[in-house]
Length: 213
Image 1 (spheres, helix red, strand yellow):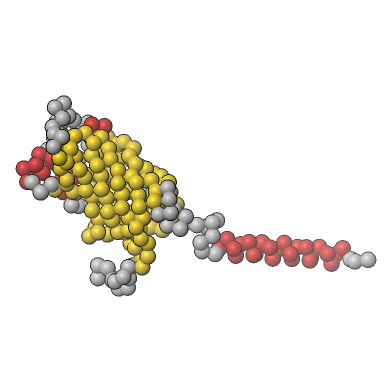
Image 2: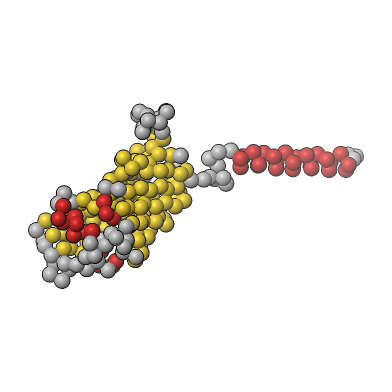
């Protein structure tokens, strides 16, 4: 007959080995249990924020904001978004017409003295395809915050083909295109709406490259 005292240490040893193997598996990078999103900082030299607004039904005025920054936490392999934001300096608006740009900066539109920044804070990312998704978040403009949605195409993720910004080595870069829209009247910006001089819908076009930190 086998001595029970010999069985117990064997069982305990087996349990201990299983526990160690499990702990080792959980410690491996890329496993689900310890999966974490990477931090990406948008390169301001490769960050374009454009918009279009209807002008009295004749054509759409195209413009840009020349100063913007942002960062986000994202895992391209799992499409997991940990959070993120864009900050746009409203006085950097540019439509290639100095008088119109001055008007956009005053109280009729952006009121840049009282509200120098426009901010988008990401809250959710839903994949819609292999390299596409829908980004939702809060847009803060003129002291009001409203939820907007941006259609996202992730164009490329990989090692940059050359050193960037004088840095040693080639950074890992994510490049994306975003499109969306919102009604400016939702933020209290109503100038020109009554006579349809200036459209309500603002179409957004965002292009950027972001470096993994």
